[in-house]
Each structure stands twice: as C-alpha cells, then as structure tokens.
Length: 294
Image (cartoon, rainbow, N blue to C red; front, side, top):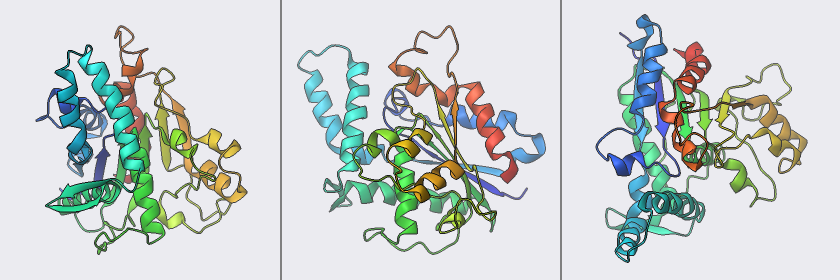
C-alpha cells in the first residue's frame, strides 16, 4: 500500500512518560487512537515518526535533579514536572545556551531544530514521493515547531544544513494540531507576535484572499490545564498589526476539550497537561482534522 501521509509528533514540557518508561514511544497511545479511528483501507497509508529532543534539554537538568534529590527532597514527580516546565522552556528560549553535540558546542535552540531535521528525514524515508505531512505538537513542542517553520520561511536556520527536498522544506505540510499549547506565555515576552502560516504556501498571501487555505491549525486545550492556552486572544493583545491578526484568525481554530476520564483524579490538576496523549476524545478530534489528507 502506498504511504501517502506522514504524521510527526513533538513532545513538550513535562513529558514524564519518557522518564517513567524510557523505552516506550511517548506517542504510542495517540498513535493507537488515531489508527483505531481511521477507515481500515486508510490505515496502511499512514507512517508515524517521533521527534525526541529531550536528551538535548536533559544534558544538565538530570544531573542536577538527581544530585538535589539526594538531599532528601520530597515529591519527586511534582519536582520533576516543575523542572521540566521551567527548565525546558527557559533553556530552549535562550538562544545563547550551549550544549555538546558530538563533541561540538552549539546552541540548544539549533540542536533541538537539528533533531527535527533528523526526524523529518527519517519520516520521509518511510513515505512515497509526494506524501503529505501533518504535525502533532504537545506543549513546548508547539512553540518549537512554529519557530522551526518561521526559520524556514525567513531563511534564518542559523547554520543548520540546507533542506534539499520539498518534504523536508515542509512544502507538503498540510496541517498542524497543537495541544496543551503555551505559545501565548512566550508571546508575552515579544513586542509583536508574528504568526506562521499553515500550510507554508499561504505565506505572503493576504489572509482575506480566496487563495488563502484556511483553518489548517487546530489548537486544543483543556480548561483545567494551566499550561494549555487558546491562541486567538492574541489577536487582541500581541497581534497589533492587522495583517498578523488576520493571519492568526484565518489559520487557527481553538477548541476546548476535557481530556482524561471523569473518574481520573488527575483530570482537574496540573497533571491534566499530560492526559491528551491517551484521551479518546482528543484522538477523535485529531482524526477529524487530518482525514482530508490521507
């Protein structure tokens, strides 16, 4: 069967699944939920790929965390979650932080984006020529991939190798789903928020034009998740340029969705941030958004 759609997963802040079970794919529950909802004839047309950049973020965090826990600190998992929330976000956002990659120091920002390059190349190898791409990005992963797109659109990849195929240049990227997205928290540090276009072919087209392909970015948040935020209120605050506000309005659909079973005690806590991956209602929303591209 031809492989006509690639689905790329990006983890984000607080992906504790990788610490609880490092050998299991963090996206396995969502991948299963998607496949269960696809028509039988379409299942074989889809290939999946994870981006894993946690090892880059963990170069210094893990050593400090384990040393600190030896001091008798309580509540290991809550502390780990907060270290991920604050440590991952601040390290990635600071483009001056250096990490070691194969013995060479490079910025953490570029190193994370290099991991995306590698994952997209691996995914392309699983697909037929001309295949489409859909991106599913959790939490910080939404910001990471938006920055990745922005750098491609503005030719500002900071010394990373050139992208040499349409798939790797994201020319066939048709849609994106962000969930538990905290882009608005980072937008507060900007004078002006400049949204990206999905698909990239929309770039440079007026958002009120009939040629602009609309509503390709689904942003899902749970009202109990303090790290998941709607994007469209940015049109009233950080998108003061009417053109930027118009792009965001034409591109994004915000959707509130309760994730996690009603009996799950984590559903109304900070830990709800982790529940999207295994939620059947969320898998259904994802399938509804991407079914046109299979």
